[in-house]
Image (cartoon, rainbow, N blue to C red; front, side):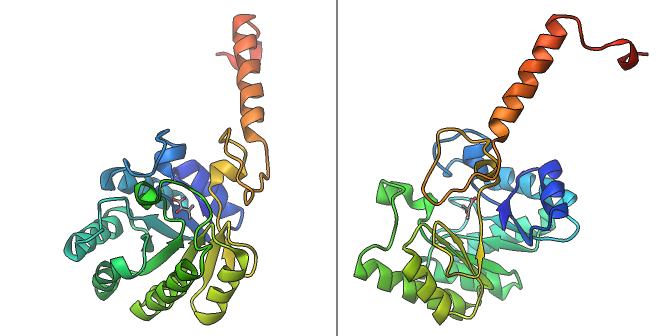
Length: 245
Ligand code: KIV
């Protein structure tokens, strides 16, 4: 699984064989430049969702429910999820949280909308924790996470993302639940992996958590190509004879 937020990149990811494309609320960070995921709105997530769905033929498309669109109000949660499904044409929604969001998850699933859960580091709760550090490192937190994972499975979530937790705990969750567990910073004893596309392609700068493997340095490549273009234009080398009418 990888994230995408627009038509052109979603098309490339789909062609490259990614099974699941997540329209993550990380769009708030990598597309809009906000320091947290909190400001992105439901309308903005729907815009990104529509754009991605148009580029995808094969992969499953999951759209993140943004902060404020489902927390603590299961009717509002259902309305938000219905809007996402109707207006984007995506296959499923993802939302953060365990026990606290049980009513919202139950309500959304009762309408026939597949839900992917998200436990561990839940960036929408940054103001509660105050840090993006590894989660569930104490026995009490680990036990809560395990119970939350079992609850999400019982509620009918079709899959679960585990973010930034110890690999051993992630492996244990993966063993006790039968739904696919997708990890990010959760080691390799899970069923699948997800990364933010801008991070794994090296477009984001100054973000290098231990779990991130950069598969390319696209940031440098793009800067090189653009400076080359600027030089050519300034030197009147672009366009040349063959590039004009
Ligand atoms: O928003 C996002 O990109 C995510 C992934 C990091 C799992 O939720």
